[in-house]
Length: 343
Image (cartoon, rainbow, N blue to C red; front, side, top):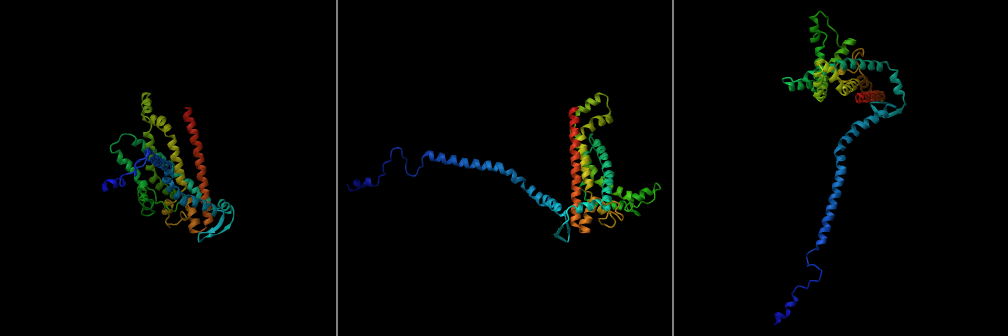
């Protein structure tokens, strides 16, 4: 009797109407928390989609700011000061005097003329040969992949190795070029000291290195030309030479303009080939500065003569020249697009 009378003390309390058993949450609370979690994940996903692309490209901009933008701004500021390489923090304001001294410097104009002549001698034959090689490779040849790789081999070769080989080839007394010219009765040519011969020798290094590279660019552009154009020209009775003149060349006008501009920019920055071709391995570009380019002149002023302010002014002058070349490229390309659309 005693146990029966005390059993109600251990029984569970009655459940209130509309309530829930202890230890269980209402179903509405679970759905609310899941919705909040989904909302948080959605916001995190939106932030990730918005900012992740900037994080992926940020290394480029950081490196560009450190090694591109900062040197550009610093050289622009240094070009307005008299500053030596041995004391780069000691600057004295001179304004535009470094620029005016450049235009009165005969060595600057000599370097500009050499850059122009070497650029013309190297660019024109280079692009013509590249066009011819690309036209040959555009046809189905046995082992065409081997020829394409061989075209790119000079571009992958070190400038130092290529220049040293050409120094041996153009040697005055024991070079292979003079040895070959002796068979046709031509006396030995002093390739490193003669004015035009030295510029021609430097140009051959540039031609050897970049002809295959431009040939592959032309080849890629030729393979993008629709075959219907060639078939229509063949039906009209055009031979291969006429197809090249009236179909291939007009279709390659944007590519030709691109290669001309890139080659011109590269010629204006020519440095390694003339530096290593010099017998004295200096920045003077020969005993009489006969093949000193603007790049060598900048190096001589900044690192040999240690005039950092003048070298900075030369660098900015070259930069302005490249801007002019870019503007000319833009104007010509717009006219080419306008003429092609009108046709």
